[in-house]
Length: 344
Ligand SMILES: *Cc1c(COP(=O)(O)O)cnc(C)c1O
Image (cartoon, rainbow, N blue to C red; front, side, top):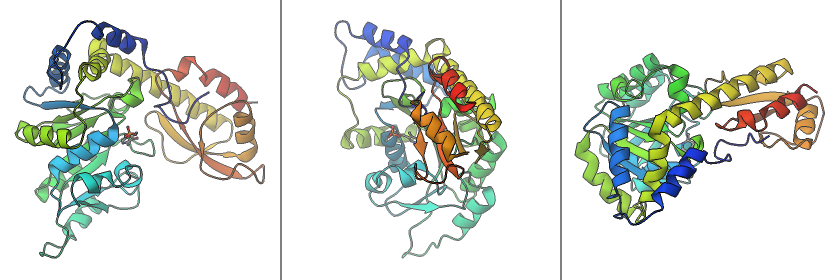
């Protein structure tokens, strides 16, 4: 009954199989392996972007900050939602990797609105003393479990374009958002005005790989230098490639995201039926909900694992907020038990 995060689950057996197959003989290091050729070509197909620059790194933080460092100058701002992972969960790595870039929080919601973004960008002073306008970073799935629809994405990227700025998509849960929208990878990115993507894998069944994709290959060499300088160029790179290759074969990545989202939908139904209050409309594989403390005590006493956003002890009827995340595997591993305990 593990709902703490979608990075707590197992690696998909097909990915382990791809790793085992890659573990034979020799391969050129530093991304010159044949599997990386397969990954690059497959991701270019998936994104319908034959010229795209495609790279692998081991963490989502690495993907975000190396992408942002490539898009932003040290004297610029990066506009993002106040809940953004780059703001709360990356230990100033965006500021460090950009060499001083400043995060500018937009609005008061996990989804930036076009009006709030326009106000933030228009209100940014342009004199020599100010941190200048820079790229926009959008998280898709948001940190609260929401998904921007394509119209919303296009409206945001349109605002960035009005000010001559580029757009980064933090897609740690890219696949979950894409299947939620029922759109293509291209529609959710460059066709909607996105310039660079952190394409997550770790939270969706990989051991530890994320791709960084730029639709303008002109920045490719700069990214390569930044990745090396930022200590994210793996010498035994074939093991990164093998995971991503296994992920993309037979659309395993899409299947796993569908499973995760379907599990979350069942979980949300169960939480509602048990009197839970859903905090933000869950649109993918994670949900924040308030439940009476006595229910948390029953669930956690039975072994359920998840983050509580309030004290464990206290008034048994007080509503306490918690976060629940479903990975690809939980549907067959603990969700039924959880729902049984939830409904007492
Ligand atoms: C998990 C996550 C990341 C990546 O985190 P790492 O721990 O560095 O792999 C990035 N963005 C979002 C929105 C995330 O949820």
